[in-house]
Length: 320
Length: 259
Ligand SMILES: Cc1cc2nc3c(=O)[nH]c(=O)nc-3n(C[C@H](O)[C@H](O)[C@H](O)COP(=O)(O)OP(=O)(O)OC[C@H]3O[C@@H](n4cnc5c(N)ncnc54)[C@H](O)[C@@H]3O)c2cc1C
Figure 1: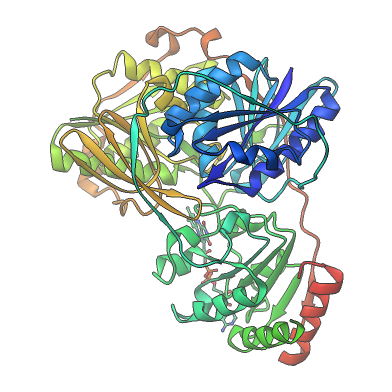
Figure 2: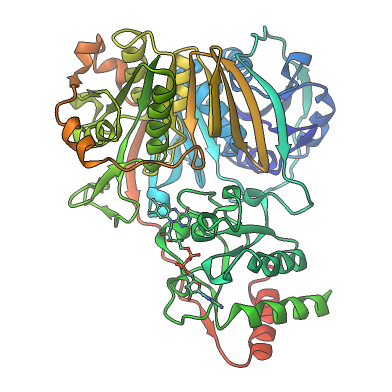
């Protein structure tokens, strides 16, 4: 049997979460004795198979078809279910990205299997897979088992390490009927600029109500540029109209796990912590020594952000 | 139009989580609410009715207390409610919930034009039921929707995706999963609350739906829940701005090694 990773590409480039999923799949395949396969779906994407081989896959199955150029959940789910029917894998891995969040449950319903979403760890022990998934916005962690034969899981981005390794790396075409999609994509608007995407970013600089107004985000953007970081926001700043909702971090926003999260003018409400509590290192900048952010910050800087951030930017520039 | 909104009753987002001796999460003394994303779904359902006429049916799977969540939606303006309640659904996984909802919506409550759900529930954060339900009902779905317009039997939806958004078009019936931003949710009015008490709320068991406990046996089983490891108490940096900043950068570089 096998472990299958459903590769995610957008406009002809593979997303980082795919490498995280392949590395995890490889680790699990070694523990369980399964083979590791990748399924690559899209149009004009066959060339990406080489990149997948770097992560120890035994086989890459490619479905390259003009009808699959724009991702639609129902058509992609049909392809995936057909592949699962042929392959009968023990485990199928996706990223918990907007792609995987929609595709995995749709495919799981087609295959009629169990799925654990948003995993932060998966292990194989005593002949079974064990999945860890945070519930109640990270206030608790559930340990799940899934009755087979097929299991599916989506992986939280930026949590699973990327490890290159060798594998047989055969590339095969997988042919299947592709149903007409039920939805038509009539437009795509991607954020401009070269800041990293929030859920993939290694560093995130977030601002809250303490910024005092929309201009405050200029300071956060300047800090983000100095660090090569993405910009996030608390809900208070989003509700005030200072930042778009897509930037909101927290229980009703994005869940992020960067290496470094810098929270400026954010009090650290429980709903905000839910979105960034799994960051590796947290810096809190707040003028209120009692602010809750200091209870989770690895480095707490007590003071006025209007003085601290400009000095911090200067210091970072000196280093470059 | 027949408009359906699927909701879930969840813990209040402020709730403190306690793991009991059995490794399961205790709901004792916890304040329960309508999942915040489902409120956007109910609001959009009511607005759709206000524009196009018809009825709004709210449905959920839950226990006795879920009736309160349904009454809340009726007070917002939904017309009637259906609760699927069965001992076999306690602790049901997303697959089981979607099987029960699909059975209800393809038989007893067939003939809908549009189904609204929240994009995910804030308790299990699984975001599975909407897409599983769309698949089981063979419907088009727009996921994480922040804007919606309906005209000529078609839906046009703006969907949030990583790093941007996408516009999808589909024929009705379709399933729409609501994200914050889709609308501003109304509070129930006092007359609304009074009226809700007399609105129909039907309770159905699995056998009423023609399902057995085996049909909904969970494939995903929570072996045990645990509390997350507490974050280690950090260092507080104080002093003159320049000193503090120099210290911080040094720590980030040399101790944490993240820049
Ligand atoms: C159902 C629900 C869901 C929610 N979801 C989210 C969510 O997803 N994300 C989220 O963030 N919140 C969420 N919230 C809201 C949350 O409860 C808080 O209200 C919110 O996070 C507060 O934002 P804030 O920290 O920016 O503002 P505040 O709590 O007002 O904090 C501002 C901070 O800035 C500091 N400050 C002010 N001026 C300065 C200065 N010059 N220098 C330094 N520090 C300064 C203050 O000391 C204060 O600590 C949710 C709430 C509910 C009920």
